[in-house]
Length: 252
Image (cartoon, one colour):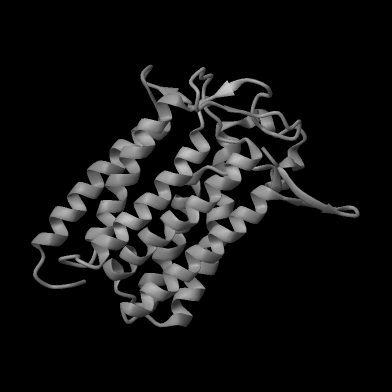
């Protein structure tokens, strides 16, 4: 693909970084708009979004090197974020903990905000996976089907000149589709919080399935990858949240 978008003298602009920036921008825009519909102050949303993004980047980067310690050569490569290398679950954990802190501190309606976050996350990750496609990270296993993707750019993180499962563009399309479906459900929701539950279900199912054709899953229990185990937990949690919220008569 095209890991390097363009160069201006000594300055190199990486496509991955640009797409992540677009994901943050559009995801934050969606979050602000939906949160305002829920009666949440813009300034609170902006603060939560900013600090959660910062914490999310740190978590996503740390998880990547926990999973792939071989990339820490040299050690300061941890700062080379333009090369790719972010683990979504790590970002969610750190970002969620930061968001929870602000939500509790500022007494923001949890479930209403969670619904807005779910849609915004899907939009942001959709752009982020386009960046993965360009950079060649999160690549798939060898695939000889007509729809296989082949990386030829020497700056790509993926193996070169080998037909691979197009896991990155599939993931991007899936996240945009999830965002669209969630928005349709959001307009017809029965109670705040259920959209967040549906997000956990939809993304968990997709991530569980896509892991079978990704090239770099870390297997545990001899069968599933760690991401698949997390996905199963997400789906179960999502089902519980949807059922619980629909049984509630009062909003929290």
